[in-house]
Length: 587
Image (cartoon, rainbow, N blue to C red; front, side):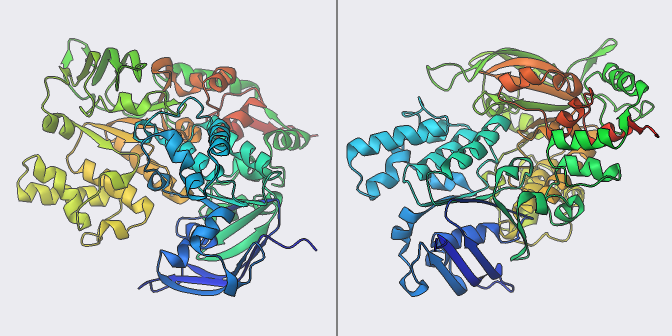
């Protein structure tokens, strides 16, 4: 009989000093060659389970471990040591940057092989193959610190694959990848299932997990549902209740009163047509009209008679100056190809701009010029009518708030209150003003009452909110956010996005870097696409999604709802827009 590669029996783990267990009575058998995806809200126990599988818990993370875990047929009493388990179970961390420490990409990928005493010729072959599989061939001599977030994530995956473990466990391995890169990781998982004995992958997005054999849905430390994707994902209300973004096909089918077990875009569209639904004749004209009304996109659900936002910044005559003016910007990290290469663009007051493109295309490098974190190699950047070279960094930082991709890169204080107060104090506000600004920022971000808590005891989503609050306390006119939804469950993503929407509607200009194309579709007004350090498309969101072939060539992909609209000849930005365009023809 084919023995499972992993067997968990009544497994439970409670972190030291924690009041409740992080894992509670987990029973699971991973069959050889199986591809399993774990989904669930933040705090459900997904990462804790992953760390149990390769021995980091309890060997390095202390607490009370109960129950049994057998790996590769070993009895629990014979369980291999951590260094032995590394050969069997390879783990890509959720915080993938914590795995990277070598001075170049090649050495990073070879590190495990050196510890395993692999022959040097074989080592080179395995390193080359692993880098090729994640799209990093040619990056061998790059310093990992110089890579983009997505490229670092690919490197972490390559370093695990090079070790050829029997089981590969990847904890949210696609969070920082562009849409095509995310799709490629799931394709790689499909290939690996035929080469190794098991793949376990934690993921927040649902569309790509349809290729898995099995889904584990976790909640409060337990596996509350287990089964094939078609069984777990066919109930959109249930998965959303448990913090997982539902398949948009099932959301649309549910809104139309149809059975929700048609999960793919093509199957869902066929079911909708067979039930007698078709596009109203006036619908296409309505969406085309919406595109013409949007100088840079009208937010879904907005009405034409909304009061326009007050412009910010200086103005001359009838036309207000842009709050950001970039002219022929070039930036080089060294003598190599420019990271930003001849970019020129303007951003108007009150816009909500999405900045997108494949990993390493220059998005973050461009954005860091807006608050002086980078100075142009060539060209000029003006903010609020003044060159960034003429602003002092404190003055510019107060007007352009920058929220980093990883909130832990900017959080350092001992309490939430001190963290939020730091910027305002640094800019010379009186203590009375600091108190008012901190209280206001905490209220806006939903952190009122958490003043005395340790920031690092907050969840990832709450730390993201704290990073936003610390920027808001300085009352910036422009808000730049680098991947603000990374690592958050669906509820956390929506909370952050709705907060950013409110800030935009109150008059702040928002520039958001994101790889989540559904975020672009549903929240942004304008979409700027970069490739190779250049801006290759810039326009309202609906226009940017009107050419799927171009998006694909730029390593992007229209989100699920937009592609579902394509099936009906629509360029819709959300499921709601599609539903509003459909009518049922009575027989």
